[in-house]
Image (cartoon, rainbow, N blue to C red; front, side, top):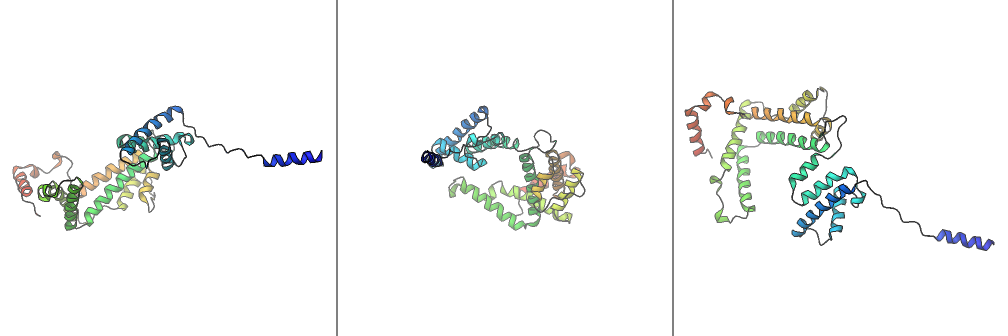
Length: 282
């Protein structure tokens, strides 16, 4: 009898451990189906461009899910992963408009936030604000010669990328480039005439404090991230509107024909402007 007990004990110790169960998410069938359909469209597009490395559709889809949300397949995903994944596959399928729309609807809402006040929407607006200010500061601090060289380089690069033969490319002088450059240089000159330099992040912070009614608000060194974290979508829209209008004012941009000086609407002014356009200063 003791020997039998000993044998049973050894047998129990040698029994194989149960395989760990895969973690499952809470995506519903109604969410998984459009994801699979969109993933298939993306796979076909990527395969047509030889970008799937010979992977099967299922293997490629799992690889993309892991890259997008860090999970090993759709069954491991949650409701919060639905729109980011859908946007990811839409981007790979070439549908950037639909992808952006889904990204703007994704993310967690702020406390007591209005519908649509998501992290992604705030990040997008914060990026537009940062870009507008950066372009304004770059215009002010870059020499006219450098701006002209960059414009010509951009024109030549675009012609080359479009595959136009060298002997058929539009010369810089005959392209829209000189007119666009003239506008930039006029805006730069307006900043210089003002004599106070460009607007800076310090001015932006003043606007943010005004719109949020928080006079001691700090955005930190990474102030673009600070904007997205500390402001609502509506506040960011107001900040962007105010900043854009102020930049236009500093750069001498008139918003409407009705707002211009009467002398600028005279025949003499239009004739002088036309002559200047026909005879560029560079």
